[in-house]
Length: 189
Image (cartoon, rainbow, N blue to C red; front, side):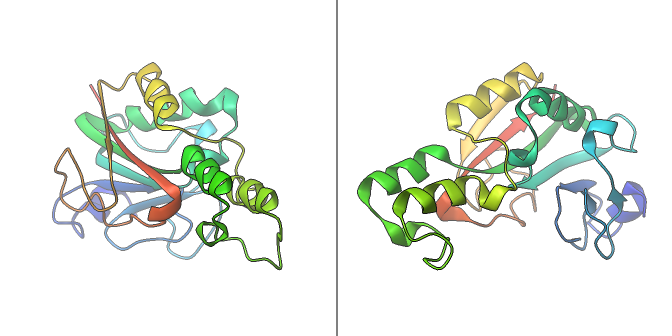
């Protein structure tokens, strides 16, 4: 389904769920894996099959950590390319600082890793931050802000689950994993 066809299901907003995992109704969904109802299956390194300025906003939940360090800025540039001027990229990312703080406190309840997978606090920290080997990159608020600016975004806003400083209707609909995540929105020029 094209982004414009999907937009008619989303109250006129053209929005992408990048790194979707599973398709969400009312979104143009893109992922590496071929899941049911996925609109695009492919690697963002090869480019997204949409024109410049296609989307009003993009949400991505814990997908950017799967991108290797050398490709981070180019991935963010590709996402920015697909946004309309003033469009917003909302990222939910694993928060390195929260994980390390929980580890230092000895707070095993913080980690979503069961004892049957990792019994030690260090093992839980590493397994969760790298999410069982799926993640290649870790994030802090300071570093994601720097990456977004290097990718050409003109404003970066740190925020919380369910709250959008840019006020985009529905942009927080996919938010989850509050305890372990940082939330950030960046505005395209």
